[in-house]
Length: 534
Image 1: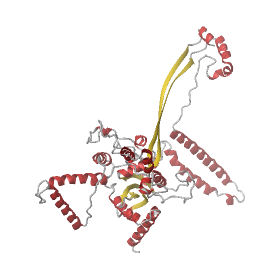
Image 2 (image 1 turned 45 degrees about the vertical axis):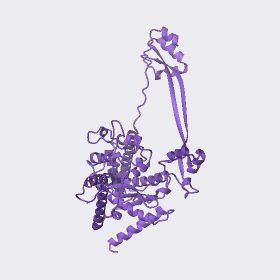
Image 3 (image 1 turned 90 degrees about the horizontal axis):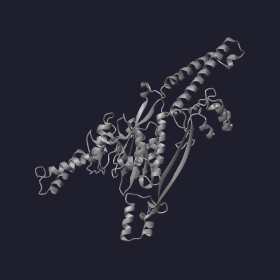
Image 4 (image 1 turned 180 degrees about the vertical axis):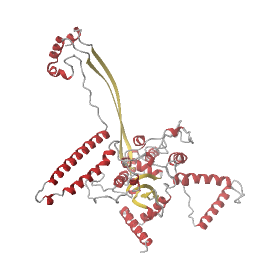
């Protein structure tokens, strides 16, 4: 065939293309093991260098209690790097490609080409015009995006449903003209015609909304939507106990903590691991989906059938998440952020870094990092690891906001107050004393006395987030233009966390979560009964 192709001047050119590809592939696998401190000392010894190495490896890890010896501190389990496997492969690959183009006009050439193609020649008309000899290629079918396919499928179902209703209407109209014995017992033509008209009105909004591929929400529907705020924080207690408390509230309600906030869960951090928080958050995310849909689901988050009530959750009302707030530790654990204040990239909302042109200490509207704010897709792909919250329908990066209480009141305000005290105690004009330390002591005595007079609890606060001025920029420049930052602050939420902590301290560790919910429910019921005069 190649010989005839070259000799025959009526055929077009043949193009032969050869390609050679070389590749280098490098793979690295890090393997970790879970061991206790006692095992590490047995492996590496107890020399000074070995103990320093073990301390460096365990630094930053809280460890998990040993299932058989939870009370022994050195038996706590830690993740330790066991080995690093690096594989490198190299190779070359060659390939040739032959392409034919043009028109075959000569009859003898057409017959020869069909003969040489053998069985394929029987279907030569599929790729060649037998009249003109033009080689034609079958255009690949253009694939539609999933949303367009869904819209097309919805249009087909809608057309079939309309045709069915029209046909049924015609049959019922004809039936009503005849006198059928006992027909009134079988069918009521007038009632069915009214039902058909109602069905047509029901699918009419679908016909309108399907044009833009999304369901429209009218202003009348918005009055039944409740904006929800989820808050989480750790409640520190004596004996190094710490509890994670998560609550739910509305962004448009006011009042006492127990009347405006619902306790979702409380868990002892010493008795939980990452999978515990992930499971609780998965159920919480599933419940928020039910509130958004306004109806109960028939399956759990893992698609297992469950027995639930049928119908709407709260009548016509629906709830939509508008803010996920909490301190830095809670957001780090819940969203599994890959950035922190000790990493090179210090912010999860933009590309501010500890050094370089995007350094976080640059402030103002014209700061370089102000142009690097992440969108939702970049936030999910780069800033966080897989977690239940990003699976929530409608999740957006604007749901994550820095909190005024943690950024300003607990961090910047103490720093400013300390700076002011240093200046005020340089001389003895306000507090008499020979040294600045003595004048600071007198200032603290006055502070405690004023707190007692006005009924405040004197307490020294400290927050470890040293880069909060950067967070203040996000509050002022990003959050404030579209929301009231003080309304979404955590003043009442933090007070709620403190009250739940008292429940936790009075509960047995084994059934703490259930006991806290029972105590909370009993307290709320008693409070409501008192307010109703019962």
